[in-house]
Image (cartoon, helix red, strand yellow):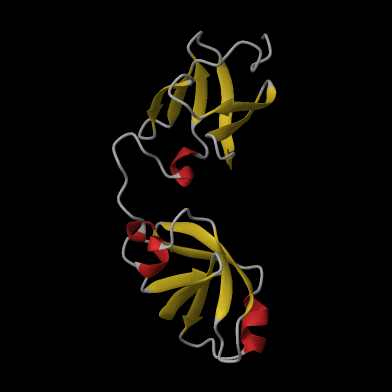
Length: 168
């Protein structure tokens, strides 16, 4: 793969048919990244993509060297990764979740709150999960709360609403 920076885009579920095709639970909002991926890493092995189609919210994937349902069953549960360069372009002030995980979170009052350990999609807005000295903190990823995101410096500045961060 070109850049060698891999991003998880889904998880192998189960065989689909008898020719080695399988269902992937996508971790993406669109299927575009699947279509852009000539190669996929499943588990720790890189495969050439033979075909990708979509069915009832799942990606149906076929890979060179994976030709039977039995072989697919060996891959069940494995994460599916692609090169970061296959991700669709972002808008300004838009971030991929993998870019936010691990960023150090600081409140505008100067307190370090911890690091982003995950994100939750709620439908209304995404929520960042922060783990640190105050335990787990959940903050909405909205313009009112997020003051500045600086992935290059590994930081994010927030203005948390009253009551969402314990007094320190």
